[in-house]
Every structure is written in C-alpha cells, then in structure tokens.
Length: 523
Image 1 (cartoon, helix red, strand yellow):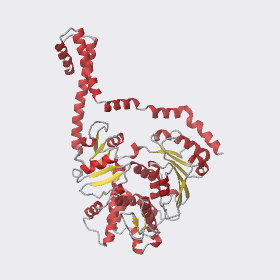
Image 2: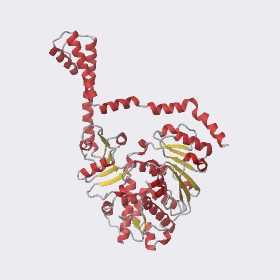
Image 3: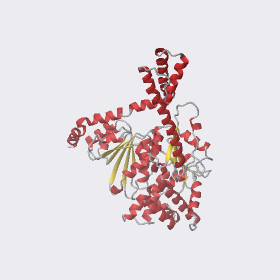
Image 4: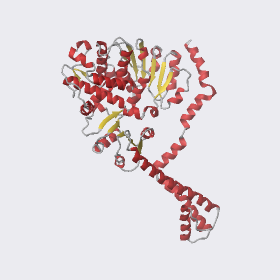
C-alpha cells in the first residue's frame, strides 16, 4: 500500500519536465551576471580598460585612415568623450568610437550622479530612529542591507589588497550590523571602534565563536547583541513548525545531520518545545561526532522527553524512520534521495529538508508534508536580526529578577534602570533572558487556553524545565555550590528539590513589568 501510494505520486510530480526546469534554474539562473560581477571585483581595472577602447579606435581611425598627425589624432579622440567632435572625417571606426565614447561619458555621469545621490540619501537616512548600516564583505550581508527600511550597506571585497577592516568608517547611525565572513573580523571591528559606536546598537554576527564564552558586558554606552545565522534560522523554523497543537501526542522526531544546521535545529527544539510535564517527545539524532555524542546523549530533559543518538547511518535504519512523525534532514545534498526513501516507508511523515534553494525543492513534490527550509534571504531580515521585541522582553525579565532579589518596588524610571542592569550582563546571561522571552509565547498560550494558571505551580515547573535546559545546552552542570566560571549551578535539580523561595523565582515578580512583557508578547 505504501509503495503504491508513492508510485502514484511520481508521475504527477515529474510530468512536464518540472524537475528538469527546477534543476536548470538552480544551475543557470544569473550565471552571466555572477561572472561579470566576479570579473569586475577581481579585476577592477577592466572597467577602465573598456572605457579606453573608443579612444584607441578613434586614434586608429583619425591617424591611420584619416592621415592626421599624432597629437591632432589624440586630441580629436579625446574630444569625442566630451561629445564634441573637432574633425569632420567620418568612417565606420570613427562612428563606433563616437557611440562608444558617448556611452562611456554617460556611464561616468550616471556614476557620479549615483554616488552623489547615495551620499545625500545616506545623510537623510541618519535622521531616522531606526537608521541602520550593514558592514560586510559577503553577499549575505549585501542581501540584508538591501532589505533595510532606513539604511544602507558598506561593502568591501575581502580579496582586495590591504586591511579590509581599515576601509570601513563608522557611520553616524543608530544601529550597526556587523556581518563580516570571519568572526574575528566582526570582533576586531567592534573592539577597534567601540568608542565611535557609543550610544548606538551593535548587532554582531558570529558563526563559530560561542558568544556565551565572551566577556561581552558593555563597557561603553553602546548596546551589543550577538546573532548566529543558524540560530536565527532554527528559531524561525520552530516558530513556524512548533508542536503546540500536537503537544498531547507522543511524538518522534528524526534529525539527520549534526553540522551547524542540525545542531541549531536540535538545540532550539530542545529549548522551546516545552509544553507540559507529561509530554513525550523523542528526539532521534543521526550524524553526531564522538564529542557531540558524549554531550548530546547525556543532556537531561527534566520531563518525559528523551534523546536517542543513533550510531548507524540513516540509510541503515529505515525501519526506525518509518515510525517518525517528522524527519528533519539538515544536510545540503542528497535531500531528494532522503525524501524518496522516507516516502517509500513512511508516506504520512512530515519531511522537512534544509536546502539553499528551498523554493525549487518544494516544487518537486505535491505532498504538502514535504517542506524545505533554509532560505537565508527570507530568514535574515532586519526584524529577525534585531529581535527588538525579544531583546526588550529579555531586558524586562532580567530587571524583574533584579527587583525580586532586591526586594524593592519598581521605580518610575525603570526603563533606564533596566538598561543599566542589562549592560552588566555578559553574553551568556543576556542569551538566558532572551531564551526566556523566546519561549514566553507558549506560556501565554497555555494560560489563555486554560491549560495552566498564571503564576501557578504548573507554570513554575515548566519554566524551571526551560531554564534548566538552557543551562544544560550551554554546558552547565549541577554542583552543590554555584561557580559561574566553572559552569556549575546548585539549582540544576528537579523542581521538587527546590526551596519554596527558589520556586517562586520562576514567576514574574512585578505586575508593572508583567503587563509590559505581555503587551510585547501580543504585538
């Protein structure tokens, strides 16, 4: 029956050359423009060489065929660029030179006008409250910059000679997005220009460096935030594909591949798919390295969820995949092979594949359970990078903790006080508060659906699980005495073992802050 279903699917999917057209688009779209762009960036002198072609052609026409003396031929050839022929001699070569010179001159004028317009535009952009500049040396950064509502991109080719970072001047805007290819370039640019970035927001892209290991407390009046492109993608993935409506089912999730994409997908599923104490989500993971197995395989879930690490390849365990509710394939290649093999044995499974061309991949199959994700042009938006609501909620959660520990009332100027407390945090503790904000919509929905009561024991238990998982995922472990430097915490225990004074810290202390946090959650 399963095989027959898949057999019926193929003719409809592949008819009319649909697969061929998709693959052709992937292979050919924009290749000519990419080649031209590459040549211009690699050999910038080519543009100047092309611009001189009309001059040399005119010299030949005037000197060789028109019999003009050398310097008169040169003068006449130069005059063509000013659309002012000084010699009446005509020939096909001269006509070609005249047309070419006009095109070159028009190009120069347009370039000057474009440059002047950009400078004027940049000047007025700076007056907007959300004015933003992207500093980058790659296509991804340029893509983000092209989508800014009030902003622009500063780009330099990293292959050019000299120190690439020295070519960038800090712009006078409210927001700065650092998207250099190399993590150390992002860190270096910030540290070298920290004073100039004072009073603004800085969003730093990191791919390999763990921001929780950095001494990232803000020493200046700038506000520093980190983002990882794979974390942004994974957070967006689980927001769109969460299990809230299936939270009472026993679910089996396969994650195949544990590189940057797979690790991020697992991490944010582990952190955010927390709905109750009784839920049963099995995470089946393929492709871990030995060190990843040692870490992921020992992560505690604090409820009935479980994590199973598979030693064999996924191809050898098709029987296991036949029982999955969702298969998430995080490897860039062989996705079509995976889809077809899973459809053979499990036609009812949701199959989600990471792809650099998700739109094209999604067209290959008529099944609405086959989805593609990973389009960075869709994921890396201004909103997703800045995460203004999340950061604001995170700041409010942090200040709520502070007030609880202080045992005081909220002051009238709590916004400034909250900002001061936020700046004292390093990357890890900022991320911890943002993670609370990222999960808060689930808590609110559980309350609105009557599943739990606000500030109830059940809500405290769920929040303690979420908090514990965040610490576990960042390599913390239990110890009788807390030691931040060694990543040890005395509260990483089951909820029942906490003192009452610690249990209530999982709630929100200030009614004023709760109202503001809830307002942000509803926006």
